[in-house]
Every structure is written in structure tokens, then in C-alpha cells.
Length: 309
Ligand SMILES: [Zn+2]
Image 1: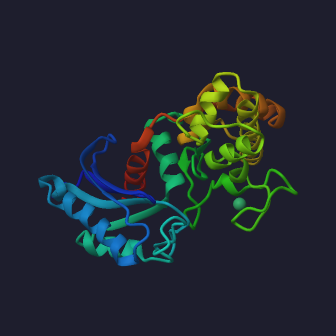
Image 2 (image 1 turned 90 degrees about the vertical axis):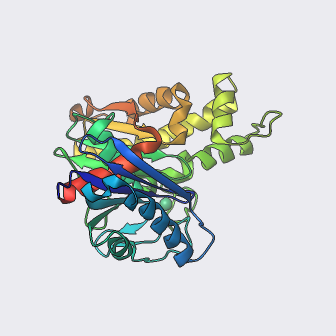
């Protein structure tokens, strides 16, 4: 049997998506279920099995040669387990073994969602053609992944590039991870909104108090909203500069909901990066918005499975 397709799974706190993906990164068959994140381990696995079952019912399933999984982290790629922060029922859950069983014994590759997004942007998106890249997902949290020497580098545990928990403020606020002054504590969407509210910004009549609403105010010239995005940009720039200084990068690609703020984020981000990334070999470092959108997780999971073959 000619196995030119891979089955991809993208597992997040709100939805579990699946697809059969071809060698060009096209999604041929799709399936999706909500994640029963507040239920027990078997209920969540039941939804994964339903998504896989829908893919397996496709006449194209016979062409699937392996399975790639991108999951909310942390993941343990070596052990084949996941412990997603926002799926409390799954702690050290043996996802690789379970998917292997459901999928009729196909080999299974597991990476974190930041690594998956990075693989997708490098394969078909904004980091395509760049051998040394950091890709960031800035949304409820801040994650990321690394491409070095032309290859995505997830590291032995599958979490390399997790820039959200680099400290950029030595005596900063405690972070839920246990450290202080992490990038995520300053630059994530909820923290952009929190800081704006603390400094006197108020939502409009619709009551929307998200980072997206703060971005709307910033575009309209609200100085508190602008300052909150500038602070987030500064934290991201410091984290990107540290990573680029260590790893000699060509490009940083920024995606996730917060990147949807556009110039409100990217103008101060590029300005701050010039302040922190100062050495001669960093002058070539560019910053670009991600382009793969909501399919990045599936395309990146497929890339991980293709790398396994
Ligand atoms: Zn942290």
C-alpha cells in the first residue's frame, strides 16, 4: 500500500482537531470535537478516538503511514506522555501509546504545540527558507519553537524554544511556573489586558476586556492601552534578543491571537528589538507575523510525522 499521507492531531484546551495531510501540507479530510477539558482522562481520550475514528472511516485512511500529534504542553516526547496545563484530567497521560493502539499500530510522533506551529511556519509559512528561526505563539500563554541549521529542534523532551518562561525581569512578579518576571507574565493576552485595567483603561460599552479590545483602544490613541502593548513588546523583544544572541538567528516569527494586534504590537516590537539585539551578527535578524493561522497545529503535527518516516 502506498502511504503518502499522514494523520495529524492538534490537541488543545478547547478543541481536538484531526486531518489527513498530504506531502504538500494540504488538509484532505478534517474532523473536530470539543475538548471535554473538565472531565476525566478517559472522556478526553474518547474525543481523540472519535476524531481518529472519523479519519479512519475515510477511504483515504489506507494511505496514512504514520500519525503526528501536536499537543498543548508540557509534553514529554521521550516518554510519549502529555500533561496539558488546561486539561487537568491528563497528567503524564500515555497519549502516544493510546493513539498507536486506536490507529491500528501506526507509528506516532509527538511534539508540543509551539514546536508544531514552528514546524508549520518553517515548512510552508513565514519562516520558509530561513535556516535559523524562532517562532512564537503569543495568546493565553506564550510558547514557541526553534529551527536551527534548517531543521526544527524540539529537544529530547519536545519543549525546546519555550520562550514564555524565560525571565526578562529579574525581580518581577512571581510566575505560576515558579520563576519570576517571565515573558508570559508580561506579554500574554490576559496580562496585556490586566496591566491596562490596573493603569486605568476601561472597556467600551460591550464590556470586552480582552487584549484585542485593548488593541482597538491603542489604535484609537489611548495612551494606557498603547503603553500596555509597548511593555509586552519590550518583554518579547528581550526574550527574542536573548534567544537570537545565543542561537544566531535569522528570523523571529510571531503568531497567536496577540499578534492579531498588528502594528500596535509589531512597531514597538521592532523598535525594542533594536535596543536589545545589538551585536553585529544580529543586524540581519528580522521579525515577521505568522501566516499559517489556525491550521498551523495540524500542518506542524503532520511535519513532525513526516520527519519520523
Ligand atoms: Zn514562568
